Length: 182
Image (cartoon, rainbow, N blue to C red):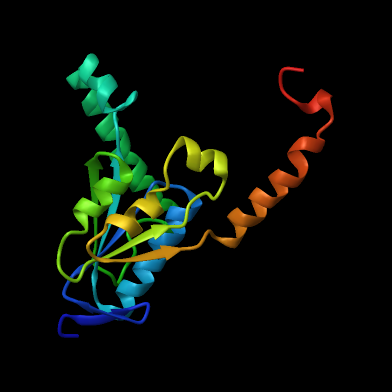
């Protein structure tokens, strides 16, 4: 291939497939989709895990601790490595894959990394609960709104949807003896 490919029906020029990885089922589905597309188009995949210090950047500025910051960065790198093992049993063969850990909020960090002409950003669709969206804005929505490149959103895996439906149906029907703390 000569630097041109097609992802999801869209023409792509010599860019990368940048995929957001957190270790969640949705991000693992996005990682699989990115690697599948890369195999078809001979494109490099860049798996990105974004992280923030505990308490956020503001909290860290109030009480900086470089050794603790280094430990959080190392933990993020280990989480990314574990996600690759969970998804593929290690680094998948037959595809060029790089991994990068970025300090920052997930949406802005992914948009900043996917900055080359021809890049495609792949993200999992994430949680659709109103409460979760109210507490933490959607990374997917942020990327779709702010990315300068094409964004491919991957729906939740069927297993995740079934588990969420089971939880919604059954959590309120547990006998009080089974509810922790009662």
